[in-house]
Image 1 (tube, rainbow, N blue to C red):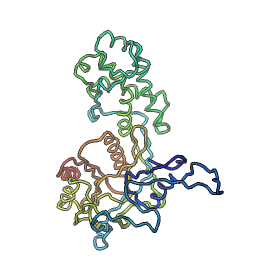
Image 2: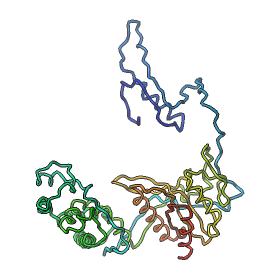
Image 3: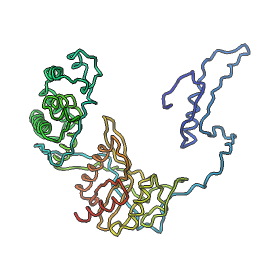
Image 4: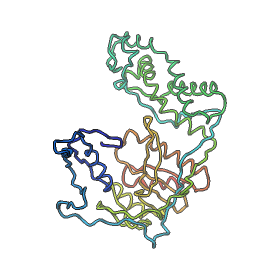
Length: 393
């Protein structure tokens, strides 16, 4: 995709593969093809004409251009807050950052820890290990079928060193948040990592690798990085003693009152307990859950998180990303529920929900914004179970 800083002087064709959200973006894309290939003056003293062909999704670049008729389009529907429904307005804190104070002693509840599944077929030998079995890097662990080869790999692995490196990695990511010296922190993490690897919370596939202590040990050692990612958030969440919220100084609260009018041609419904005039659906599951929310006696107000600027920051594979949950619900008890409506699970879902859990816990502990909860709905009607758990609690 053409982005800022593009300065190639040999662009002759540009194809638009997605709709432009503004005229400015349209002009910027065309501008990527307006760099001249040469500045040599011709015999007439003028620069020779050069052209760029822009095609794909139709758009207007110059004011005098007229869009060709594409066919009848349904009229765009305005989406905006309704003054008469202001009692259904929903507000939330605009959290910029969550600061933690963590206990000196770290803990990890093994019973509450989600199992980690490691696949020997997906475990690729490193460049340091592969030569041990006269192979090239890129070979998967599952391709090593002989006990003698596995034994040779195990002899090259220094499991204690890998555990220590994993512990150092976890502690380095929490620099300045844990009390005590670094040696004390690392010793605690080593103990936790060893207890997890010895438990049934780390499961290896195929079954032959799980049944063999040696093969299981090798698989875990070569996936120590995955184990670190799996444990670090759990250790931190269970060791939190105090949290402090960094609130946006300009806008301390987000609100449905602040939503600007926007237009859509997508499918929508007419909600009853919503401050916004229409709810635009991205899926049939969202539509059905919206119906359940309107009918629930425990739901006082709700809103689809669309054009509301409510985002949760999370980290996945070392990259900071932003995530927009689907619904915000205010219950008759005064509690709030952030609901994610999800069909198929994606790789980054656990990271999203971990960040969302962290957000709701921190906001609740702060005490100024009431109690917040989160839930995930995978099929129609799940939301009623989510609400029932909160009401019972």
